[in-house]
Amino acid sequence: MRGRAPLRRVLYCAASAAIIWNPHLRAYYDHLIARGKLHKVAMVATMRRLLLILNAIIKTGTPWKLAGGIVDDTTGGSFVRYEWQPYAGISVARNRGIELAVGDFLAFPDADDLWVDDKLAWQTAALQADSELDMIFGYVQQFSSPELASE
Image (cartoon, rainbow, N blue to C red; front, side):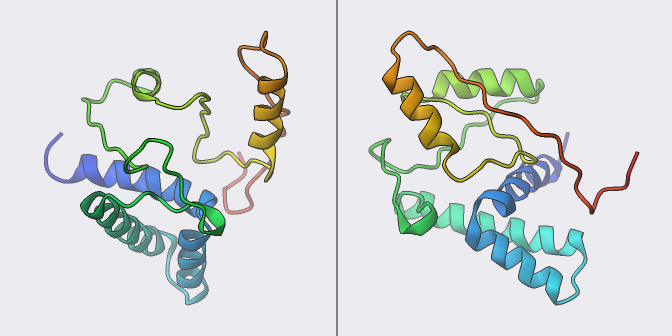
């Protein structure tokens, strides 16, 4: 693959997750949609804004600020780390993420996943309360997005 297509694909996936999980980027995206911008235009603008934020984080070494202004500095440096590898599928990418992970716990949210606000708090408490547990799975509920055509 040549040109900027691989970068656009990565940014699109990241922006898709960001408009679900990051309240500031979600508000920016919603604002553009409310002004009559097409989804694709709003996504490209959100991708650009996300890229600017990530560039600033990398340049300054400033940790990513989570919701409520909380700073995650568990890595001792920048919370954001870019790691490139040739495309080999989602399983290979996740396995590489596991190899690079530095925290005590690992989660695999996808761009279309919605988590209740205190999901991680519940799961972390359960893991810490019982040292025999290796992993936790949560309740799953299927939902339909109104913006998707029914199949």
